[in-house]
Length: 553
Image (cartoon, rainbow, N blue to C red):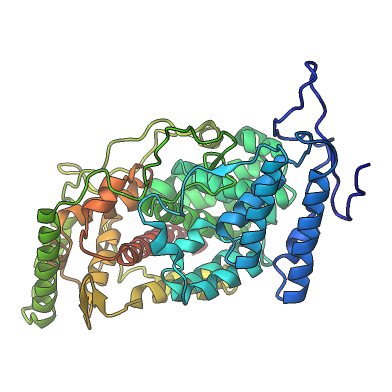
């Protein structure tokens, strides 16, 4: 006789098919079927800060799964696909060892009972960075545990960003405020706007992540099958979304007026619009990070798992290795590049020569119009992304193509984050300006005083060159900065990576990632990714905030 299910679990045995054989299939259940597995309450208690409550929840989870597995004879046990994927995620990414080990044990037991269990298709959070570099024990564990206890999961973004804990802390605070705290937009709309923004860069990772958040917040599933199913008010953001993602310098007062003026139908309030704008710009820049760090799908995402066993002759190739093996000569060349860069940084710091404003402007224009090729275009995005994109052919174009009339340059002295953008965001979306400013400050000042194999290095000039180069790509000029420094400090392979990641992130490849800074630590490359991400975010915000300022006058 089958055991009685525990509270929070509804167990259902697999039936037999017409041939009389026990079904081993594991499929999505319809809404009318029972979800055989842990209740949301049980899963929430796994994230309790009370160790005793966490232990009790773990026992309840184990007991419930084991009861379901023992319902009938071998091969007839049934656990929902959702529960199996949840166990897979806990087994691969939970920072609490006891939870991780128990989830692994439950999956193994389910498999022994004849249940077809999923396995992760990839090892580690990134296809570019070895898992051992990211998952090593140490100081980073504390912030990963805090993330799990606060959010209920530790995703690949968090794992990679944890290489820089000071930045991760303010990133999580900002994202939590944008998505969860009180604000002018309902929670499911926030997730849907994020999905719309992620789709512009074909980022199925973020689309899947926020589709789950959208449904959990009470969103209608039909909206995910196409923009035409969403409210007109949301779809009216599409023009602003594509411009923010690809050519923010084209955003004008007219675009704002069409959304917020009294005659607009539907009409956005300025507070609602600024919330939507920050969400979209935040997501576009986060797409750059996801692609630039080569993030793998989550274990419970499409493309992150399979129910098929590995073939006997399958020899897994590490996705973390570059396509080519680094030879001895390449390592020597990489070491020489570091020494040359070190020398150039010292020379620039000691340089006393001053240039006229005309010469500074000429150097900016030269940098802005330099031809830097980007990678080949990827294939068509998956349907779950494509159905959420309007005008998919609309992409980034060089701000100043050679021989063409460029839009007017935005001079940082005329409209800057510090003097204009910060106060506007804080006025329309209280505290958000402060959170964004903290994030910009942390990434700008983040340093460990080391570079590749050297310690005690002042990297300020290199970090500033990266930031200003990205703003240059977006047509923003600092009158007091010598753009000749960019060419001195940023070698061509680094420029290719930065431009691809900032302007065409979906075209980032392992080859581009592994070609630049060949002798640097992966954490240093992630640091560069963070600078690109935040500089891009600020540039997009500046153009939109300037348009809003002009509308409000």
